[in-house]
Every structure is written in structure tokens, then in C-alpha cells.
Amino acid sequence: MSSDKTSAGYKSAISRAKEFIEHQWRDQLTLEQIASHVCISPFYFQRIFKEQVGETPKEYLIRVRLENAIQRIFVDRHMTVFDVALECGFSSQAAFARAFRQRFGVSATEFRNLSFSEVAKLAAAWGPGIQKVFRNILLGKMDSKAGQKLRKSITIKRIEPLTVIYQATTMVSEEHLGEEFRKLADRAEAHDLEVDMSQCLGVMYDFPLHTPLEKCRYRVCIGITGESAKHPKFSTMNLSGGKYGVFPVKGDIELAIRYSIFFFSDWLKTTPFQRSEQPYLYFERFSSLPGPRTYSSMTREIYVPLRPS
Image (cartoon, rainbow, N blue to C red):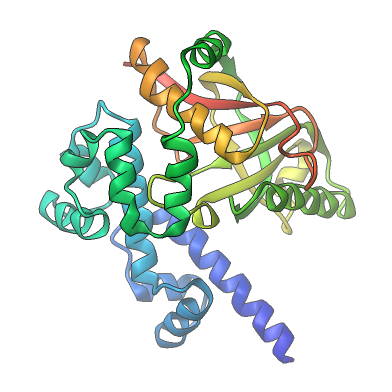
């Protein structure tokens, strides 16, 4: 096997391993289980995972758990810290408390009670990517007129379950996301898949309270019908039907995050709803296929899954 094919094979294996972790992170996964899933010896798997991801499998697993935990601490305020610890795969509240404080510098309870400005000061130790997010988003207050306009634009919609093909990536930039949508559409066309270009979705898994945008997990998705859902060359997922809080966004990633913060920290608290527990945080829906130059200029809708409080 040529070195190029070997490298591509390892890259594919690491991608599958990350996806396995992201599906099973609540379980007590071992290095041996993850390596076995991609058919590589544990010793060699750990080495190539570290080379390609920059973290060991254990470090990556803990980071995924803590990112889900801090997201729940911030967004799902109906959950107790103990509930969050168990939900996020920690064997005990004590183990969760140690890991959370080591990662974020404060306890989960303290973090929940911090103001945005206090979190921004805390984030100074989290790296330049995080500082940029807090400087440009959290510290940029939305004036009352803009807040009222956004509040009026939020609606409740009920949708049917939807099956999509997807490509996993990260939220590194608007241009990158637009390019990933184009690549997925081109692959679908090459394999003659029956796709619905009016169902172009971006599924978001991480809230950038601690995770740099280049590590925030994102799936570019296109709706499919019929036998396309079983094509061996494509990964598929189902988006749950039900009630969603929906609001429009036209602009870059930072604007979408700013609007999302308003939704969770302001609007949601005044309603009889809370976020419904889903594998994803929310998704954005485009009316047509976005591209590298059109992602930010297209109006899309953010869909947040809801259930009664």
C-alpha cells in the first residue's frame, strides 16, 4: 500500500474513532474498545490519534464530556450539577467536580452563577480562540432595540422527523462551512443520490464557551429521500421531529452565537419551555445550498429543540 493510501486510511480511521467517541461518550469507554472499533492495535492507535488530533483518545473523550457538561450548565439550567455529572458520563459527582475545576478553573456551580463579563475574564486562560469569542460576542451587548426585534422574530414550529446525509467538520470559518456544503452536494450528485436541496442543514454540537471554533463540532447535512438513505458511501442521521424554537439569522458565525445566547439566557427563561434533550444543541436551516462566499449572506433559521418545562 502506498504511503498516500496508508495516510488516507489512518485519517479515515481517526475520523471513525472520533465519531464513535462522540456517539458513545456517556459510556465508560476504554482505549481498547475505541481501537477495536477501527481495527487498529491500541498502542499504534493511540500514537496516530495523538499525531492527528493533538490529544490522546482519553483526553479527547474527557474534553467531549466536559464540553457537553459546560453546555448543559449554561443552557439547561433546570438540570442540577449532579444530574449534569451523571448525564455526561462521569462515574461520580466528585470525579466530575475535579475534572471541571481542573479544566475551567472554577466549580460547575460557580460557573453557572458567573456573569458574561466574569466568564470572559476567566476565559483569558483558555487560549486566544476563546478570548476572541468572548471579546466579540459575549462582551458586545445587544441593545434593547435589537433584542426586542429578535424576541419578536422567535416562533414555535413543529417539524416532522428528517433523514439527512452528513459530513462531520468544525466551525473554523464561514468559508470552510460553505465549502463543506458544496463538497457534500458534489459527492451526492456524483453518486446520483435523491437529495432535497431545500433541506440544507448545519447541525451544531458545541457552544463556544470553552471550545475554540476550530474545534466546535458541526455536521453539514442535506435531506435525502428513498433508497438514498441506505447508500454505503454516505453517513446518515435522523433529526427528531417535534417542537422547536426558531429564529432567523443573516450574518457570520459570531452573530448566530450572539443570537443564540439571547435565546437561551433571555427569551427561553420567559417561556413554559426548556431545551429538549437531543444529541445536538441546535441546527441551522438554509433554503438553498450555501457556498464559501454565500454562507454569511444567506438568511437561515436556527432551530432549537424544545419540550415543556
